[in-house]
Each structure stands twice: as structure tokens, then as C-alpha cells.
Length: 76
Image 1 (cartoon, rainbow, N blue to C red):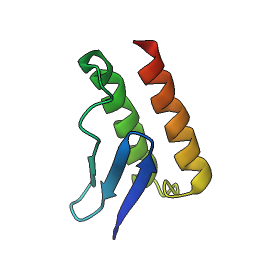
Image 2: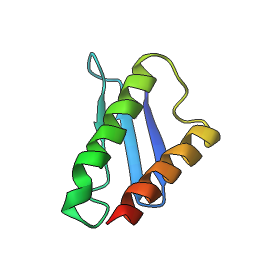
Image 3: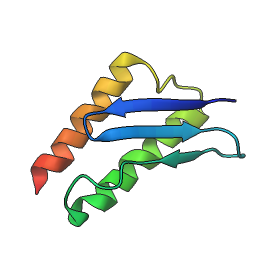
């Protein structure tokens, strides 16, 4: 399978299917290290969705990811 890039306002999230189970690369941080656990949770959800066949490259999915990241960034 191929890699999928999800472009967000915080950087690019890359979902890669080169290895069994896939992998995900995140932006370094949202700006506050307290946000990192929430960012990891979003990443896990994206990877799970991608592995189950959900089109995480879809514009509406990307919009939802951006809304979630904004909510995390606004929390702190």
C-alpha cells in the first residue's frame, strides 16, 4: 500500500502502510508538551481508521482531524 498525507494547520500527518500494521508520523508538537498525549491519541485513531479501510485522505476526514487538533491546541 501507499502512504497517505493528511495536511493540517499544524503540519503533515503521514500514514504509511509499508510495514504490517502501518505507521504514522506526526508534527513535532502542537506547541505545548502537555498536548502530546492527546496528539498521540488522535494519531492512534487515524492509524486504526486507515488500517480498517476508512479513507483518511478524504477532505471531510481531514477537516475533522483539524477540528480535533484545534480543540487540543485551545485546551492549554
